[in-house]
Length: 98
Image (cartoon, rainbow, N blue to C red; front, side, top):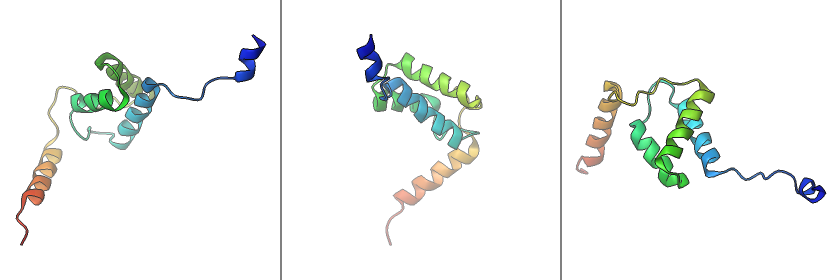
């Protein structure tokens, strides 16, 4: 027992903790609307942190509870402003160089 106390707690964050921190940063940065659909963001977390879908979704829910930001809609399409910005960006990227 004494040997365990000498080692101390581990400072390494689990993939779930890392995903939660990542979601918290996104929720704080994009308070009103997600930068893309919530499903895409959860999929990205699954790949980035090697999580199952239920664990990634739980990390997202935990982050919502921590930040108090529950404004991101999971069923509603993005706002017109976001869709227009995406369309403008696509136009600029696909425009021929002159």
